Length: 136
Image 1 (cartoon, rainbow, N blue to C red):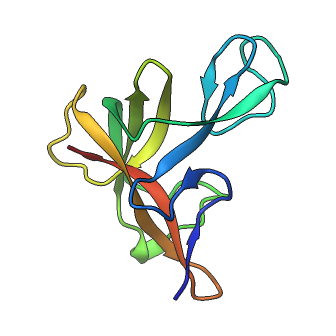
Image 2: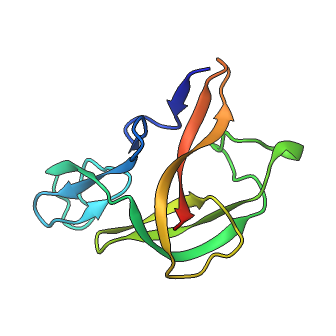
Image 3: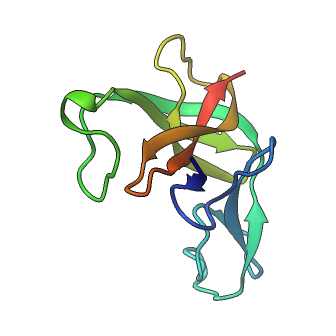
């Protein structure tokens, strides 16, 4: 079985130290995730790839108790398992919406770290991986 990312150019996932791939505006320095071609603050099209920190703090969270609407491609029906989702603040740069590896014991402000986790198996039998944050 081959491992493939849930989306191209969203994270560096092949290494033991994965990072999310965002962008930084060359004009006003705002950081975005996912990467964007134009700046949401100043409308500049001078955006550069920017690797985000692997660690941050939990800003807010909840439990996703039902399958998200399309284009969600994960398990549905009886195979669906509720999961944690939240915002993780990565330094002073950006807040990222992400899966959380657990739903128990979470506290606003706790330290979190990025990891690569299995998401589903695709039609070719590949393990599709995504990113999530886990408490430190």
